[in-house]
Image (spheres, rainbow over the protein chains, first blue to last red):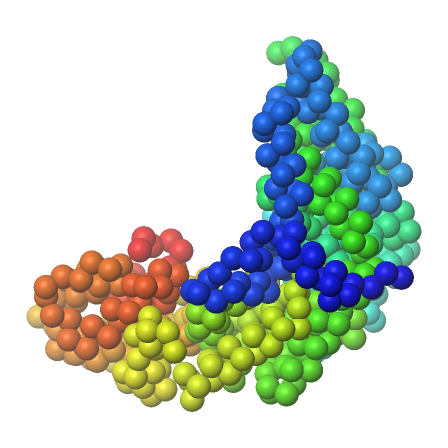
Length: 409
Length: 152
């Protein structure tokens, strides 16, 4: 396996223009990658190139620009299908983000299917975007939302998860990696257990896609969602993967242009997959940029990325122990997310002070209020590491945390 | 340390954060409200006694939050004692002007320590949470006010 040397990291950092900017006269230390990732120059250039050379709407023009744009957009779909190892590129739907992907499944798959007495099972570590869409569809259909609990390390308790699965369970929705805790769920095993009772599975992969190779066929998940902006691509674009056999009979999520074969005032015939789910003009440059981002990641190597990020997490975790921080989320299997609290100092005070030393971290409830409730903290600080981060940056973070303690002594 | 940061976390604010005044449950309150900032989870519950002449005779609060929101609630309860309800509204307006970088000529007394918040737009909501809660309490509106539904 390739590993990333210091020289590799230095070169990579040079490819992200924002990483050489300054905040309050300090070099930017960007440790909020779980929130959104920074963009490499190649992605920025791809957007520029699209607007300068072949900006046109897709599918609709019998002219060269539109053909170029259509080919690039469809090329992006093919690239995403390869990235996820989907069987067929028609299983890749472009949406606005992970949130829209989950809402689409809840409304187009869940709503026609669910009946009173049926159950939707989620876990206690979900992001609001994998809670609220299921609450809505349960309210609409009379189905019941159930929650598999977590332990104090922030891991889903597998026995309790299994106990909540039954013939009533129609849908299991869970994060691949928790955004608030960093926990990596053992989703392959959890998917198999869900299938054993006849439930389908919806995986929120927003945090996982940037860190780990995903093989939807090996996982055998039914739906998998992630966002472009967290994986070094443009904002405003998300991916929904779904098995063709499930997507085919689903009704459209939105109606409009491009998702139809023919329209009369009496009847509309919908397009086949994937266009049935892509009403209206799509985020064309987003898809083009995402393709370039995926090429870029693949070229660096996801295994090398994962290894470097894991080393950063280990280094930061060790310092967190030395600094006597309270770490929130200590799962055995963790991605490069360190959620913590500092003494009794509120996360927003810490965040404000860190910013003055150029350090960007997330301070808040991370759209996971039930997780905060479980750990009885109003908010945490979260440093999340990318392959472009360095141990020196983690040192800057901890020095700045020392300054916070001085101010609050 | 950076000057803006010194100004924000100055001693008076830190001291009120460490030892908030009027913290606890006010007996015989006749006005109360809860305030919540969903962005950071800060919560304030404010109780007041207002007499028949619309004078605020007592104010106490409970809650949890950042140093700015706790110090603001603490100073609010201090400054409210003996104020007329109408004066309290005017004070909020002037305080808000101060926080958004438009200080008026009217002296704000101890509240002037919050002038430094204006350099931190993201923290204005922390400083105003207790004040939004006050407004809801004076309207005797028992609904929970949120910093995300009121206007700044």
